[in-house]
Image (cartoon, rainbow, N blue to C red; front, side):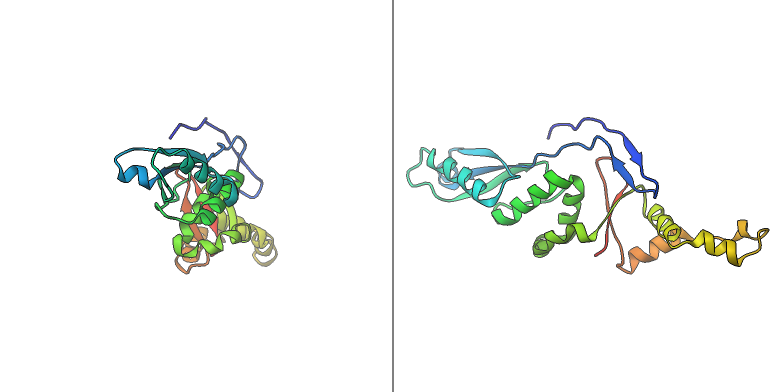
Length: 202
């Protein structure tokens, strides 16, 4: 896999990170003719996976039609790249593969993290990405701190606690984040490319 260009992270006001120059992902698959493979010959083609299923199937048909093996019809995925950690099988459905690749092309590594979290058996839920994705954060604790801030905790402390005691009143955001993760309220996937975590509401 080719290296991605370095990029800079910007911090949004609520602590969420934005990747100003996020690497562009171009998922690809290598499809091979099984008739040729069984005959001891390599015949296949790299295809841009971020296409609708019809276009991918057309590319596969063209690859098979160019095979020197008569009647080549069966094929398999023998390699892939830039799927952001998603593991593909030789015979994964073109429909699911297309949806994952298109999602990665649009949303980047976050969609790959979502597909990996779901796993093969739950790829029917890929369309729930935008409802469940809570952004890219430096850590679970940063997310919990932002959540407490959004709830107006500082204002509540100012109204309810004497000023001289306010510096000693704190909510343990790290423990809150840990408990949310343990209870299944929040799911974190490490971002191996740039650091931090992708967060999802399961």
